[in-house]
Image (cartoon, rainbow, N blue to C red; front, side, top):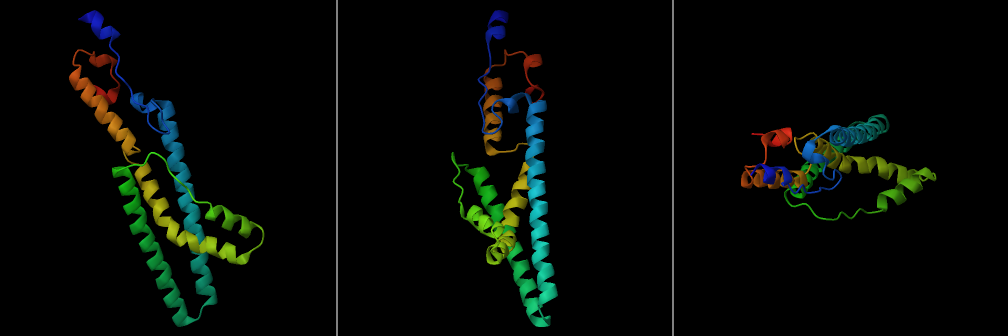
Amino acid sequence: MTERSTNLQPPIPSIPLFGQAWYERGFGYWTKRALISIALGLLLLLSIVFIWAVVATIIDKASSWPRVVLLLLVAAGVSWSHYVGFKQVQARNIKPSSNTVAGSAGVITGAAAYGGSSIAGGLILLGQIFAVGWITANFAYSLRRYVSTFEVRAVDQMQEWFVEHPEFPNHQRPKQFQQ
């Protein structure tokens, strides 16, 4: 029985972005997690700066009653963005897709703004009103115990494996799986 337990190795599933690093949750895993959270935090900060630029422009350029209407529209857009963003990220975490398709409209608009199109630049600023919720939701979800549904499923799978194999020595298990 002792010889069998030394040869017995758990089947560690590989998850997107982290491979098998989630199992031990070592330095590499936490470095990736920190970099993801920092990148999303910086993206959120940039988005907030862009929204502030839109609000400041409205306050400076609009007269009294159009200013109120425009600011209410910005507030409604940001609120709607957060509602949709959290709803989409939560749905993705419940049923993740195997591949993600990203559009290229933002790249084209960004290139037009860089080329000097003020309309494209304005659209980028306005677009932040509708993107900030998705960025906020992803940032919030990056701070959870497990970064993705793939990791949750892998942990559940490993916990089941350890229950099915009680002969596997407790001291050889990663901290998160020790009894």
